[in-house]
Length: 287
Image (tube, rainbow, N blue to C red; front, side, top):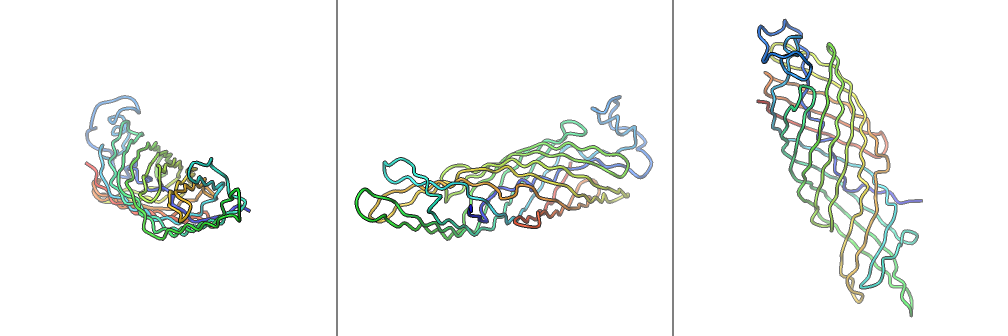
């Protein structure tokens, strides 16, 4: 049986804060923003009575996540010896809660295509314990226990794209993004792809844009964590842990409120009702 652990994971669910197409309930604007005759131009939507979001946005995002990760292999390298897999005789456990804080900038490249970048920080309270034995030519195997109990943090950055379409009060959205983080307690880079789709409802008044949606998301974050430590009477040891999400799919449920086309507040929760839970908060300004 493979060990399971709640481990560090980048959560680009944080990037579902894309702005939306607003189907206007009131009469169309008296004059379009620009003159155009195709869905690739903003003027075409104004002529159809559809109010588009302002072209640029900046926001603050916060994500909290607790997700189980499956360890597929553990290998150790001691001094100049070749790497040795110890999955069959290693005990490995990690307790972890992760939060992501970032700023996000986006722009509408096309009326239905939004591109964005983000940068921020990953923080994780991590309690890591691994124990194993190192064989030696003569004598009994050497027992090794590695423990780390600390707050891990590091820079986070990435980007992605969102495609949105709507008909009447309903809309659909597809999003794909990539993010990367360099955590100070581990050697190497952690990266992840996050792909999601949502179906939702929106309602526009003279001052507010109200939206609610449901969807599904997939996280691809297979990675190798490398931990380098000095062992008494042995020397430097490098432990490599291959890991991936136990269940990469989650269901999403959320809503947002826009105020005067400029301000937008968002809340979303996601879970697979087993080993993963996440919450996303976002506030943004469009101009």
